[in-house]
Amino acid sequence: DEHLKEKAAKKMASSFGDDARVAVSVFSYENEWITKGPFTTPAKAVAAVGRATFPQGSTNTADALTKALSHIKGHGSKGAKQIVYVITDGEPNNVQNTAAASAKLRKAARLAFIPVGKSAPVSRMQSWASKPTSENVFYAKDFKALKYQLKKAVNSTCNNKANEAKSKKVKVEKEKATKVTQEKNAKYKYALQCRTTVVSSNKAGVIRVGPDGGYTMTG
Image (cartoon, rainbow, N blue to C red; front, side, top):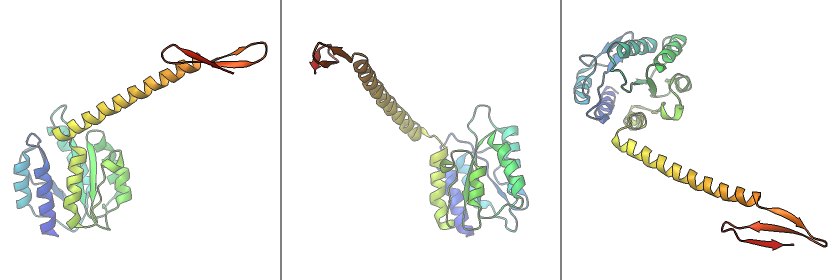
C-alpha cells in the first residue's frame, strides 16, 4: 500500500500545470507539511512525496483541514484559485470537528475528498465537500484504483487550458441552441397572436398567418 500511495500521490502532483503552485502534507495524529516553503512547483512536490513517510495510527482530519485553511490564509495569493484535496482511507477521529472544519475551509477554497476503501465514510465526505458532490468526491475502492480517481479529481477541479477551451466551446453551443429556441418560440408566439376567428353568416373560419406575411383561411 505504501508504494501505491506514493505512486498515486506523485502522479497527482505531476498532473498540475507548470504554472500551478502546490503544498502537500501528510497527517495522522498531527499534520506535517512535506513540501518546503508556503507553496512549490509540481515537480518539487513530486520529489517531496518521494521522500515522505506516510504515518499511521490515527486520522485527525479536522486538524489537517484547519491547518490547510491557516496555510491558505497566511500564504495564498490573492485572487488565486484555491483547491484542497483530502485523500484518506479512514474514519476521522472526530466527525463533528471535521464537519465544522470543512464548513470553514469551503469558504476559502474548493474542498475535494478522495476516500479510499471500505473504511472511508463516503456519505459523510459528500456532505463535507464542496458542491456539486459529483465533481468533488472521487471514491477509490482500493489503492490500486486511487491513481485513476486522482486523475479524475484533477481534471474536474483544475481548469487548465484544454478544459477552459472545452468549457468555452460548450458555452457557445448552448448559447446557439438557446438562440435558435428563442427564435422558434418568437415565431410561434407571433403566429398565435395573429390567429383569429372570423364569423360569416353561415360558417366560422381560422386565419393562419405565415412567417412571410401570407395567410390562408380554412373553415
